[in-house]
Image (tube, rainbow, N blue to C red; front, top):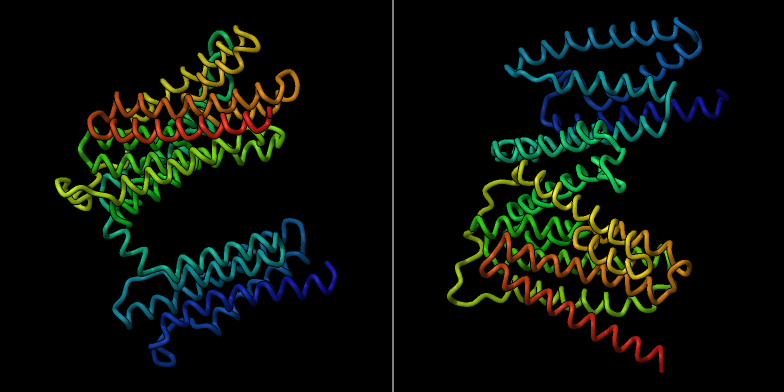
Length: 428
């Protein structure tokens, strides 16, 4: 390590100490001199001390490096623990935050000398942010209910524990079903429902459902539709507001489809963009009308509350069903050849638009010509829009279903007119 790099690494160790010290010093700024264990100066020196121990370990190298680092950290932590204990006794408090923060400062200072500088800086910023958000985090935990905590833990377990061990190899005949794809669908369904719950809780019914719909639409508008339909059926929210969330998710889906085509095969954009943009505009208008235009005989949407972020077994059941639909779409596409590309796209599009669009973008101009590929893309999007009518009628029922029918027909009608006008102009 040359002198310039050594100075840079020591500068980072000092910066880490100052960052932690600034937060700790500000929080305890009301304490008299000598009334606290560590302030900005102590934390800054702790960062440098960690850097010195790290540099010493690097100079020793081999097994000795580990011994130097271990003994240095143990000695620092033990000495600091004595002062923190006396501080807690004097203040009649019970907290280990200062001790943990100072120990982490020392450790990151050492890592800045022996490890990745960017990682050390990122961890310091993240830890300082957690320290600074003490009041909001404590307030959030106090308001947290058991169903919210349980659902959050289940969703995290589904994503970070179960997903890595779920097989990624298709099972069954005709290409089979990929268990990981099905599990990803389950995660998206649960995630869309959870985001909707949180958004409504913190932003209110109208704003929350629209925000959740837009966010969920980035991943899967179908998932948003299923989640909102279940809530409409359980009378957990205004059917009009919940349908507005589906409309907003659909608008994002149309725009997302345009972005995929633009990124993968711009030649399809000429036919695909006008109907998709027109449909997106119709969906946004439908969402705004459903969310903010309320009849006098309708109850105040703010009186509705979501009872549960999501039901695990319901999510898994829908994921299995949607996975089966994807497999059927693939089979149809393989059996019917060229025409099957359009029919298969429509079948798969009932559930997932992105995957089939990526596949179709790679098939143009060969073996599919530009117009056939464009029509296949639009058929997938149209089928996905029609599937929302089925979901609304089967799961949501009642007023929710009627609102979804109105939104979907408006999008399909406007999109079809835009496609007709585009074809007429191009073939003039």
